[in-house]
Length: 107
Image (cartoon, rainbow, N blue to C red; front, side, top):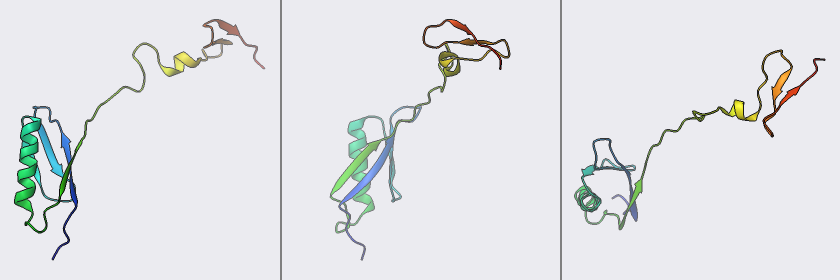
């Protein structure tokens, strides 16, 4: 006989088409809903259906997962431009502290 779980964790995502999708970690349980209230009811019902009474976990944890994509560089100026850039062999370097150009002698 399997040991009773004290808790079960669901990862919840918001699909592009809307609503919520919840998948249990370590178990074959998946459900979807349009609202959070519906999600709570659907997850609870899925857990009740999946486990026998003596194996059913006491607590359900919902972990909301959101994916965001951000650019490494800002569109205005790259980090390289903001921190000082060498302009080839011209001997002129950008000074990031005050925005002035500096003459540098070649060795």
